[in-house]
Each structure stands twice: as structure tokens, then as C-alpha cells.
Length: 156
Image 1: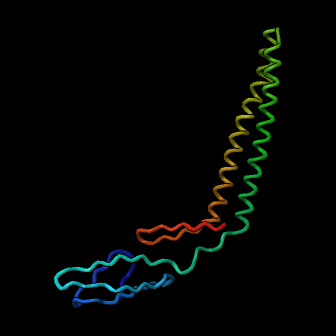
Image 2: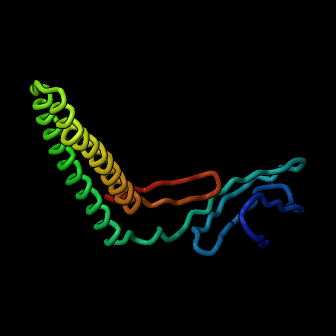
Image 3: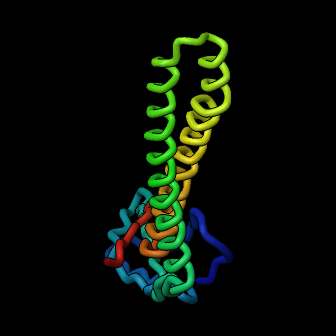
């Protein structure tokens, strides 16, 4: 018997007794099982045909891009740390300034912009590292999907 596509299939007119069922599909491992068909009932067989070939090997370029993203993230994190330290120093100067107008000018010209830059650079660092890690994991994981089954295989 031949069927079109995945999903439940019904075969009628099978005599009672032990029957050998062989299932195959192009690009999938063949499965063979013995099924006991009762005289007055229905036999059920649940089978998942698994792919014979793994997904294509990950591209080296994607892994290099992932490493580049992580590197950029680490650099942005270092820059954010430097900006934070500079903002703290400027804030200490702000606190020690006795002239209120000069203190406000110092805060608006040095402390606040550095604090904002540190936050933006820190956020960019987190995004780059997370994106790089996601790309790296994505290129190192093989996913096989069959009806009712998902199999993840990690390649180290």
C-alpha cells in the first residue's frame, strides 16, 4: 500500500493474526514491526520515521560571525565600564563643586552624557553577546523532527 503525506493512515481488510508492517519514505529510515491484528478489533501502530541524513553541517562563516559578535559585545562591555568609571569620577567632581551653577553645568555636560553612554554601550554589549551565543548554539545543534518527536543533538 502506498500513501501520500504524513498523518494517520487506515488499512482495512487485513486478516487477523500477527502481521509484518514495513514503512518507508524517501530520506527516512525504514521501520519494520510485527502487529497483532485482533479478530474483532483494530490494531494501532504508532511509528516515527527518522531522517537518514543529518541537517547540513554548520557553516564556518556563521561560527566566525558568532565569535565576532561576542568579541564586539565584550569590547562594548569594556567601553561601557570605562564610561561608567568616568561618569563616577565626574559625579565626584560634581559633588565637590561648591558653586551650584558650575555643578549643574558639570552634571549636564559630563556626568549625564557619560551615564547615558554607559547604559547604551552596556545594553549593546549584552545584545551582541546574546546574539553571538544564539548564532553559535544554532550552528552547533542538529534538530530532527518526526511526528510526535523532536530530537536535539549537540555537536561539541
